[in-house]
Image (cartoon, rainbow, N blue to C red; front, side):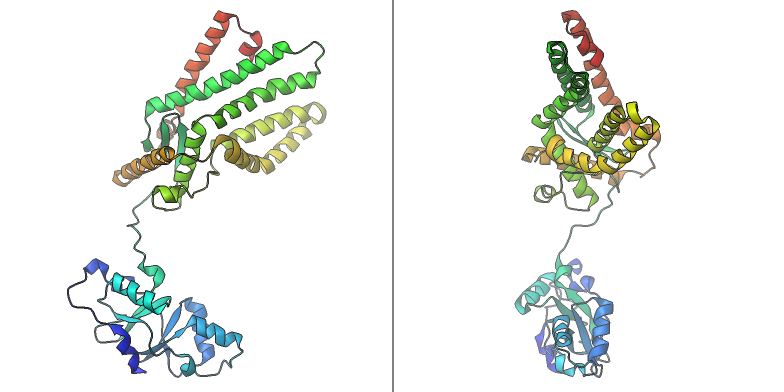
Length: 385
């Protein structure tokens, strides 16, 4: 069985960089001995989960058992007391520990096997290297465990609660202004329709119009605006960050557009509870409030996820993905150079961008009220605002 050594590919000394040797990838998988039974080998495979088990005499490699062949023997009802000798591959793919990743890739590709055996310079067994071990993933630098974000008219904003990346303060102020302007447009249209309702319109129609139409018009504008695409890119890059993925466009584009911590879910939950309360309180009182709460708890997330997918986000454009990746890389750079302090409530509030959004929202709200009064627009619009 010593003929397996003729399969070893020797490497000229000094041609491989120290950080490129397969010795850094070796998995020290426990070997089995030539006298062992098939049953003992099966138990060892179950414990290790390896693709192969080396067969040794002392520390000298005699061959390997492949998991695939042992599974076949098991399915064919081979006696577990049989010797493993009949199943040993005496010429497995093998390399010395000084070999390179590229040599390992070449040997595995030629053999078609999922793993190879690694030997020390004296030919003694060290461990195995699998095909999956050859993938050199970029260094795993630290990342914030949780990231929040926001879609703005100027691009993506990201934060971990104390640090931020992406667009700056003016974009957040503009976001508050833009979202409030959409709400104002919905209110004006609703007020116009309300004023045009004929006498005798059923009260439930009026109630539904006042409560539902402004919200529906707001979401419609969000869907049609570029912010929906930016919102989708923001969710995708947050998923990539939190899953430890590389920030490459082709990877980010594969991430889901729906995120469980999106504010859309909270908004849907609030709207759902408020609507159910109005429907149930007049007849069921406290029981109606309890039922509204239970129904909201059950449905707010599924409905919110549906709203994210089909209303508040859409497939991002390339420039949206690029903006999201830029924000993520900037946030990571700040995080890796920071002192990693626990953020205070104040720093969390500022990093969230909410104060700046509130500034933009307030400005638009005040201007809208002033313009409505100046132009003598519907009092109903002023009330809805």
